[in-house]
Image (spheres, rainbow, N blue to C red):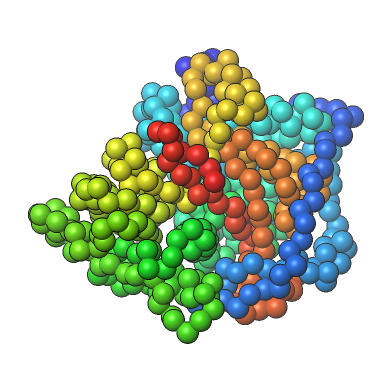
Length: 447
């Protein structure tokens, strides 16, 4: 473990409140390049496809009235910015030796934090002055730490849902943007234009998968896979509505559905034998994504489907859990020609990624994981928006169009269901960018 990393963890463990990378004043003589402006969509808001909750997840038109409104905003540009970050370090009950174990929460968060530090260094070299304060959200009194954020220009985190909901409302009440890099939910906060969720929502994943699948396969080849449970039926119903809206006909359930007998996954000789048709491709969709509720079922379904496919060609689409689970192997990826919907993808052949890997290793004597790239990209996103647009940068995030290390951001306004595109009705801002990762030549590539 590098010297810098030991210093970081030592400060966090002792004080649970560290100031780092930005207490010095830096010159603003350099001009940071503004991001390219995205082409605005010519489409108007679509009718909701039947939301799984109270929020419409359809694309919202960037209207002339909206831009006329935000042009009148006081941008509150400053010479230096304060950023408060809540990490789920859980230092009070955690062995600090886990900081180098990338399979632990502390290891992942240490990687994320280290990536952020490298972004801060880059931002300061580009002319920014930043004061970064890091707090452990899961040790000590969270409310008192949150109250200390009243002077913040931006708050990043926390991860815990309840803490994030409180923080989102705190940001709304104090005009402080709150960036959520780890959690996403439509009901975190109401009427809150200060909340920015960087993880696309569950139904965003469904929209992406169904649109992708229907562009490549016929409806008769596509099959939704799930359990005989109410939540799985809701998943099916939503995806059927998406498919039906694309078809624009009277068939409200155009896709096949297959209800899996959970007992057959463990004790039965077969579980999927009835779904295969000779000389036809079977395209399955597993809509499950919760580690807490779905991981065992997803693993058993993948294992059984992989074993039973025989000589049939199977293509399995699914959620990030398929890639994030350590129980699903390369054999499963290969046998099922997996295609995974995910918001992050690191192309290690890119020069910028290779340069980051080199600098990261030189700094920390460790190779970066996805968490390090994510931490870097989150801080670059926030820093460059502060520089270009000031404290109320979130109202301009829809214009951001730049390649980062592990993703692109497509930040859009989210409104109440059936509301018009009006500035006052913003519920929150949401990243909508998603990749379809395809397993080819023993690796996943973004399509």
